[in-house]
Amino acid sequence: MAKNNDHITDTELLIMNVIWRREHATIREIASDIYGSTDTSEYGTVQSLLNRLESKGFIKRDRSGFAHEFHALIQREQLVAQQLTEVANKVCQGSFTPLLMQLVGKIKLSDQEREQLKKMIDEK
Image (cartoon, rainbow, N blue to C red):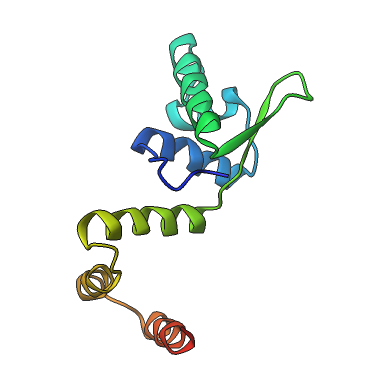
């Protein structure tokens, strides 16, 4: 599992999005999805990024097949929570209130989203 202080870069997030969408993927599949091809340099770049994601605890490698497959160890929702907590700690001294106020004030919520938000607040 990813450590709370492990930051994910924008490029690493591209790879995570492919893995989340596919549920598991090989280096070649990820390179093809991101770059549209699997040239040697693109393959190497993806391989390096996967190694970093694995060392950070975001993914695991399945070595049982000929081509290694990569699986997410963190779900998208967990990463969102982790990143929001990081922002709240860094910018708002750990308080989520200013962060939530800014998010709610800047986006247009549907009626359904407003109801979901009210329900979540009431439950907490």
